[in-house]
Structure formats: structure tokens, C-alpha cells
Image (cartoon, rainbow, N blue to C red):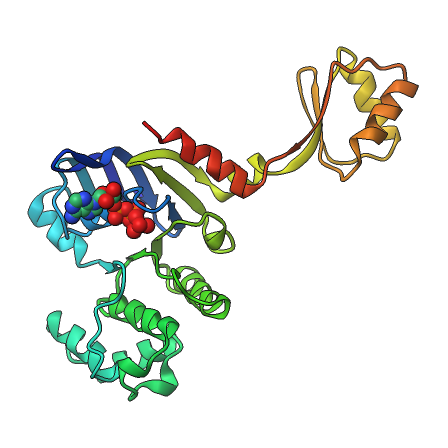
Length: 303
Ligand code: ATP
């Protein structure tokens, strides 16, 4: 089974002489949660608008559920729910009425589905409350419910946690995790803060200045951002033996280099090596924080 449900190829979008997207490429696979990360103005909304058909790309291709033609994409977009920037809500109408209007757009009329959806997004006890009385977090959850009305297989959300307080963020994160894990919905969610989505996503697509700078799984990112002491020595076998004798358990060897992941000060390691008459040509503590890594990547997108 082909588990790629979205493929973006060489997507370019210009506004006059301003290039918002430049040869953007990435894929989204079924059952995963992608964090689409980039600084303000990086091109996230433009890419999402092109994917969801809200704007035309200048060049390049969007393939959704295997469809690339205009007609095919129209059908495929019906399997996609999206919330771009702020949800479009009728503030004078209740949560129920807002969803009812959305259903009408899809030619549906199913009160039970509306009730279920509102419970699903945590608004079950405010079904008949007007949207204007909702907090920002409640409005975002109602926006997600609107995006879910057509039972999408792919949910695309543009900065849904932007401006939310920590509790509001936790609520949305839990909701999205459950939509993916329990309902099998694939999610693409944008943010300008890498760490904001850390507990939620399985993969990152990082964009900067209109260009993709990295597509990386969370596991790979964790490996890159882990802390370890790096040793380089022409006596790698002896050094590895000595570390084992000292009770070190978490190591990785690549040629003459050894990474020690146990939480041991590098001064202790230096002392052991000195006493063991092992020559060190390099000894350093590697500690890349997620934020540092991200800042470094953003620099790469600059023209
Ligand atoms: P943010 O996090 O601030 O929403 P973003 O990553 O979503 O940023 P976009 O909104 O996609 O970024 O904007 C990408 C670039 O394209 C920006 O430089 C923006 O000023 C420009 N841009 C977006 N829409 C238009 C438009 N309609 N006309 C001209 N320039 C535009």
C-alpha cells in the first residue's frame, strides 16, 4: 500500500518580485504527525494555501492521495480538513450552529455527528454557547471541529496553538494526538517554534526563507540533539575496554571515535584515560539544544 498521501514537488510561489516559496519538496506519510516549522514569513501559510487549493502555485506540483490533476485534486481535497490561520466562525452563532452551517456546505445534515464532534474536541458542555463567548483555545477547538466535519484522512492546521496559554496548548496537543492515534488521521501542523510541538509530532519539515532546510524524523532529531562526550584516540579498543571497566554502559563507536552517552563529566574521562596511558587526540562535550539546532538550520535558508 502506498502510504504517501501528500507529495509536494518543486513548489514555487512568487508575489511580484517576492519569492515566498522556492522549489519546495516534501512528503507526508499516512498515520504520522508532521510539524511544519519555520520563522515568521518562512512560507508555511503560503505552502498550506497552495496544498489546500486556496492559492495557485507559480510552478511545481501538489499530489494529494495520488491525485495531481485539477479534478483529481478537488476530489482529494474533500478528504482533507484544514484550519488556516484563525478559524472562520460566525461569532453570533452557537458552536452547534457553526458546525451545522459547515455541514450544509458539504450537503449534510446530521445533528448526532455535530454533537459527537463537539464532545470529541472538548466542547460538549458548551454546545449551545455562542462562539463570541469562547476563549481563544475554545475557538481553535471549534475550528478543528469544523475541519473535521467531512471526516478527513488528512488534517492541515496552520499555527493552531499560536497565542494559546499553556493549558490551551496541552488541550490541543492531546486532542491532536488522539485524532492521530485513535482515529488514524494524518496531521500536518505548522508553528514558528520548534519545541512547541516536540511532544506531539513524529516528524519535522523545516522551512526557512521559502526553502525546505530539513525533513527529519523526531527520532533523528533526538539523536542529533543528544548530549554526549566525544573521545578520539588511536587506542580506541583499549579506551573502550577501560570505559567498560569503569562501568560506562552507553557508548557508540565510529572508527577512532567513541561517544559516551552516560552522564559522566569529561574531566573524569580525561583522568581515566591519562591513568590508563591512553592518548586522547580529542575530548569534547557535545550538547546541542533543540533551539540551537533550529537556529543553525534557519541560518541555512538565508539567501
Ligand atoms: P507566519 O508565521 O508569519 O504566518 P509564514 O511562514 O506562514 O509566516 P507566509 O505567510 O507564507 O509565511 O509568507 C511568506 C512570504 O510571502 C512572506 O515574506 C510574506 O510577506 C509573503 N507573502 C505572503 N502572502 C503574500 C501576498 N498575498 N502578497 C505579497 N507577499 C505575500
